[in-house]
Amino acid sequence: MPPEELYVDSFSAEEVDWVEVGSSPYLHDSDDDYIRCAINNKYESAFGFPASGGSGTINSVKIRVEAMSSTIGVYAEVYVWDGSAWQLLGVTDTSDVYTWNEFDATAILNTWAKINGATLRFKCVRTSGTVYVRRATRKVDYTPVVVAAKAGLHPSKIIPLILNNQ
Image (cartoon, rainbow, N blue to C red; front, side, top):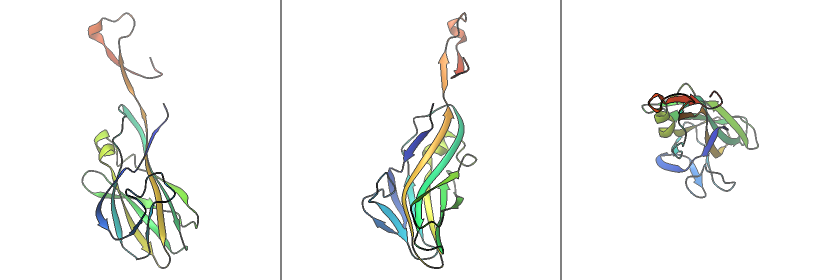
């Protein structure tokens, strides 16, 4: 089964120190909507995702952010909410064209409740220039669990089977 990758679908405007351009939630799949910042140490949050349709064993969770910088002296710190605190995932590339940045959040978003409750926060870090963030996704690779009766077993002995390992 391919990983489930979902774009941001909500913006709660908890912190609004950046400039929002276009339509909320700004970081969905659009070339026209984005957020930008040219002031050091300013935050923008919280960007949420739709609930996952997944269940089973979580193999990996990636947060992907499409961003660019006007100069080498500016980038965004990317944070994810783990249910109790903001956790730093890393920083965006300083490319002057939009580039996808992928952050491993598997150790942080290690339950389905944390995956479904995850939101993003951005911090502008700069000495000069402007950072732009245009899209963000949450990509979950998982092994679904199937409940089935194995041949020859009594229906009361139904066991979970992992796909491809029947």
